[in-house]
Image (tube, rainbow, N blue to C red; front, side, top):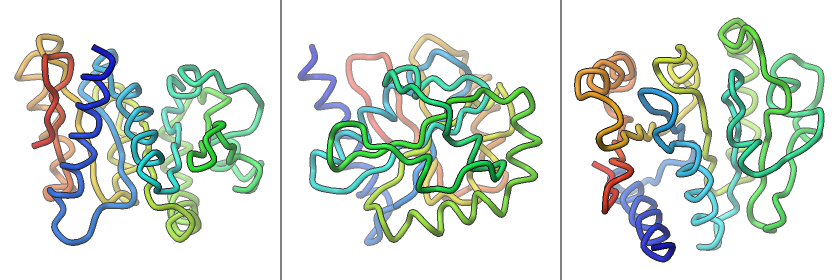
Length: 205
C-alpha cells in the first residue's frame, strides 16, 4: 500500500510538468474545498518527491489558521511564515532544513487570528518572498487553507504558477467542490489542476 501511495505522488508530480507545456510551474499552491481532504499530506509527499528527483524544494506552511504542515512534520520553534509576513523576522531566519539536504521548509509556528488581514496587508511581502525564493529553488510547494475556510488561497494565487485542488472522493459533495473551484477560477482560469484523493488511484487533470 505504501509503495502504491508513493506511485500516486510521483504520477501527480509527472502530470504537473506535463500539464504545463514546456515550462514547468515553479511555485505551486495546494488547497481543497474543506479540511480533511488530504491536501497537507499531498503537499508534504509531493515536495519530498521533487527533492528525491534532485530538485531543491521548499515547502511553505501558509495555512495561518491551522498550521497543519508544521504539525505533520513536527517542526518546533517561534519563527515562521507569520513572522516573515509581519516583518518580525527576515527570510533567512524562517527557512529551515527538514533533514533532507534538498528539502527546506518555512513553517508556520504562530497561528494568526486574522489571517486575511495579515495576507492582504502583506501582498508586497508575498511578492518579495517569491521573488527571493524563485532563483534558489527548483520548486516551491505552498500549503494553504481550504477554500471554505477563507480567501487565503485566492490571495496566495497572485504569486503562484499553478494551483493544485485536492478533492477527496466521497468526502465532499460535487456541488461544494464545484463552488470552490469556481471561486478559484475567477482569477486563475488556466492555473488549476485537480487531484482526486482517497480513492484507489489519484490523478491530476
